[in-house]
Length: 558
Image (cartoon, rainbow, N blue to C red):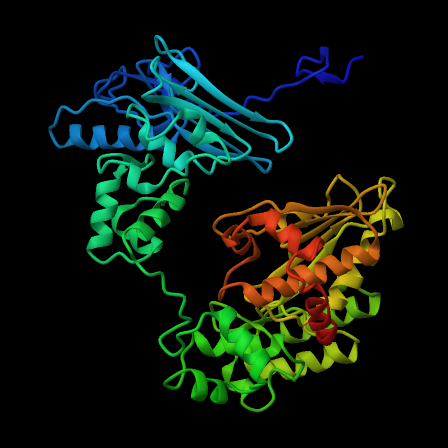
């Protein structure tokens, strides 16, 4: 039978059993059309190899340029066109050198990469394919007719070998083709690549340039990015940068700062084992100096994660950032914003009236936040105690909108109001927010609960996301915003309430114990050996035998 009905813009309808979406870049060439420049059959400003349009005074670069009729929707060719035009403007005669169309994408949680002659169009090309349906992976290497030279390839489901294989296109293979894509086969190390092999295709950076930067003192990935630009565009070559650092014998420091040689995770264990409850006691015994703006808030967070003393009691108060100390967010004009907690987005009429009265009395700007709360901007520091007294009297408390801790648990209205709701998302969101409020962690935590797969609470953009199913709850972890947004990935499915909460307890406490300073859950998951599968074994199967310990630690917090 027909599985899909497609309605077109002219109101005609096509019945289909499968729809394939082909997404790409469409050139924005309206200006060129209005100016009377020649455009390509599929759009884009037509240029010659010198990037000159049909008007000799006008150049076109990037994705809007149709170089000899072809538009390139990738960053590397865009940079090449810019370099050619820069050369022409300085009196040179540079021409577009062609494009490396290799790319690595992530589509709805599936790694996809292609490089070189991915479709085996070269004369005599042979394809070596490994398809593992059980793991959802597919790998194809295209090689010369004598299987000695790599011509291209396609990786789906697991693109971890992309950074190592792409620079070898056109070069002799260091091992049998099948061994390079087999899980039990040869590991392709950085030492197998010649110095002129291109590691970063986006910015055209060779292995030799990167090794040279390391030799001159670039001792970590950010330093390499800074002096070579490698890894600053798509980031696909970052794993290879780490391999080159390891190969060069560079010891990656895990020291928290100049005052503590230990990492954050090591300091966490020290605090737990020794029972030290002050920063001064910890630095006297395990560090040096008087501390700094890196180690003081970090240790304050660790102390708060391992006990429930008031964060402003005694020495603790001096360790806090300004925002934590004043229970408000410092804004760019020197005033503060106040955010009371509204678990699950719920609020009473009396509380809303109180917020309105406070805003009117103190002349504050009101904004509904992305986490379903009300933010009050423009309070002076001496007004904060008066504002908080009014809010506390109305039954409200700090929303921790400033701390490295739980921020919000967002929810839709779920089965309580929505006709599509499959579970009570509001009730679960309120339960989770009250359970984890005040939980100090390496970085901020945001949660969400959606009552059905329509995902109105946007749970897959959160550190912990819960989506209702007909049979219970699906649990997603590791979704973040920020500079590199990530979708959360499925940890476990169709869970009952008790199992869901138990898994979230374990996940959050495992993160709090082992993550680096200011490391969000998404990069923390990626840094774990074994990634999400290892995390699933720890949280769901208790492979390390620490589940009870993690749950007990969370119970102490609660």
